[in-house]
Length: 230
Image (cartoon, rainbow, N blue to C red; front, side, top):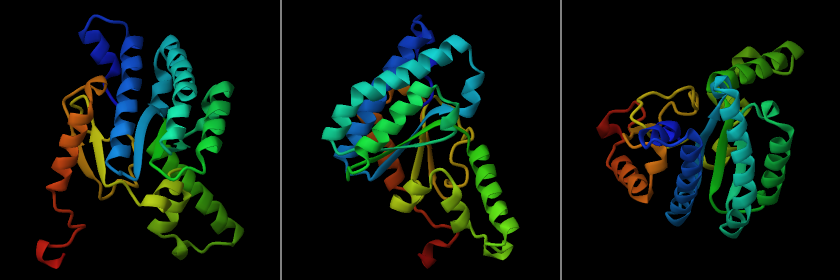
């Protein structure tokens, strides 16, 4: 979800207006994903590097995140959406941590769309943590080095609950014209199809979403095989 501040700046508006419009765009994307029967949607809400932004902007984002969760929870419940969060959640303000825990618990029994929110997240940090946990098991003698596999590493990542439920991501959509992953799900996205859009996140709507899905549907995913081997 990239481009909120640029969207606001291009219109002569303060950044907070762009962030609020970004929340509206997310709500529309969740509704569209649910309507189309997409099993899981992961959104990059706030990176670990975003903590380096101006303190006032970070404070606003934390407050917006907390209020959005509170306001949207009833609708998420009605639509059967299950919430999952990944990242260094311990860095978040205590009130937001409590809200996240409450929303996760409240939606745990839902069977609709799995909405995975990456907040205070860094794929590199996540991989380091996974490797450290596995190294600890090796040191304790409960795991042999040769037993470490890609599947085992995947199970040690903060996205494990999501990939266990629906598998690794099929499609990654990035808005704002930037063509890089920016430290997002680097391990999980090994075979993920990439779609880069020029629109800024607040302008991302159902039509943009559908166009990205149609583009994805036209691709052939070979996973290293030749076309005739599939």
